[in-house]
Length: 410
Ligand SMILES: *Cc1c(COP(=O)(O)O)cnc(C)c1O
Image: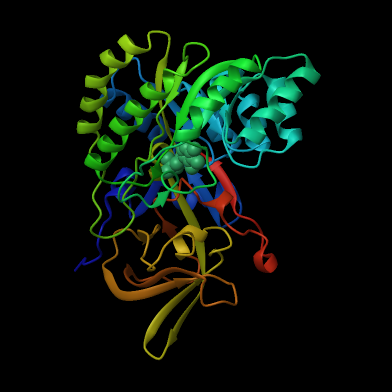
C-alpha cells in the first residue's frame, strides 16, 4: 500500500480530498490563483504559530529577532515585523524592506562584512543599529557620522574564540571574515568611546542550522560569558547583547526536530544573572531559518514523465534555478533529498522510486533523486517542503533564462 515516507514537515499542511492545503487553500486552486508555476507559498498561520511556539519556550524578557536573509519577501517580512522584537538585515536592500514595514529603525540591525560607504550612509541616515565588522568599518562610520551630523548607533560584531558544534554553517571561531576577533574587541570598544559613537552593544553569532539543543546551550553559555567579559570594556553601558541563534530544522531522513525545552530552561536560568550584571541591557537572539523554513513550500508542475532504462523521471518546470538548496548545491557535501510529495495526489500509494528533475541542461538540476513517490503525470504538482528559508532569494534565477518563481503569502 502506502510505503511513502512522510516527513514531519508535511503534517503541518492538512490534506483534503487527496490535495495538500496551504493557508487553507487546496494546492490546485492556489496554483490557479497564482496563475503560473513554479511558485513558493508561505503559510502565515504557520509563521505566527512558530513565533508563538518559540516565545512559549523562551523566557519573557528575551528579545526575538528575525534574520531576514532567510526569506526577504516583503509581505512575509511585514508579517514577521508584527511578531518579533527586531529585524536583522544584511544589506541596504534588505534594510529598505525592513524599514518599509514601519518597524522602529532602532529595532533594525545591519550585519555583514564589506558594507560599502553608500550603505553606511543610508544606515546612519535611517537610524538603524550597525553591527560593525572591522576597525576600518568603524572609522568609516565615524567619518560618515561627522559628515551627516548624526551619531551612528554602533554595536560591535565579535568573532568568538569558539564555534557552534555540529552546525551546518560555521560563522564564528578561528579565522573568519565575520566580526572582530574577540581579543581585539577591548581596544575597539575604547575607540568607539573616543569617537563619540552611540554605543548599542555586542553581537556574537557562532553558527547556523544546529539540531542539537546541547550544542546550542553550550554555545549560548560561552557567548553570554564572552559578552559579559567584553562588556567590562564598554564605553557606555550595553543596551543589547545579541547572542545569535543557529536553531536548525530537520531536512533529511533521520534528522529530528530541535528540542527547544533545554534551550529555554538554560536561558531562563541565565537571565537573572545577565540582568544583574548588565541592568540596562536586553538579551536577544536572532533566528532566520527556524522561524520561516517550515512554513514554506515550493511547487512545480510536471511537464513530462520519462522512463529511461527503467528509471522514472518527472521533468518539471522548476529546479535549481529557483531552489538551489533542494538541488543539493547550497552547502551540502553529500546530496540528500528534501521532503517531496505529489501535492494533488497525496493519498496515492507508493508508485516506486522516481527522480524529480528540472528543465535545465545540467545533471545538477535535481529536486528528488530516486525517491519513493506517488504516481505522477504531466500537469501534476510536485511539492518540496521545508522551503520557506534560503529558497528563492538564495538561487541563481538567471541561470538558463527561465521565468522566475512567483511567491505568495497565504
Ligand atoms: C545568516 C545569519 C543568521 C540566520 O541564520 P539562520 O540559520 O537562518 O537562523 C543570523 N545571524 C547572522 C549574523 C547571520 O549571518
